[in-house]
Image 1 (spheres, one colour):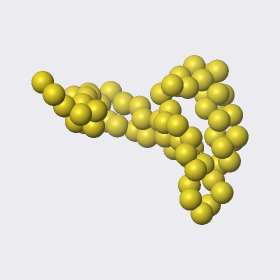
Image 2: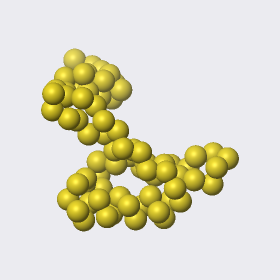
Image 3: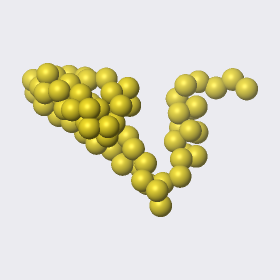
Length: 72
């Protein structure tokens, strides 16, 4: 079967059991990076589970998102 990565991710997410929750960090890139490291140290979320830190055009801020699933 030949499918692109977007189709694969959509299929994977639709098969997840539970409510989709997203955490969004917005601030300076240094601040966002620091909070990601703190949450990792607290064993809440591995650094690799967060999206890359991306700049928000025109704001001087950056953002990163973590998606978790809550059991129903």
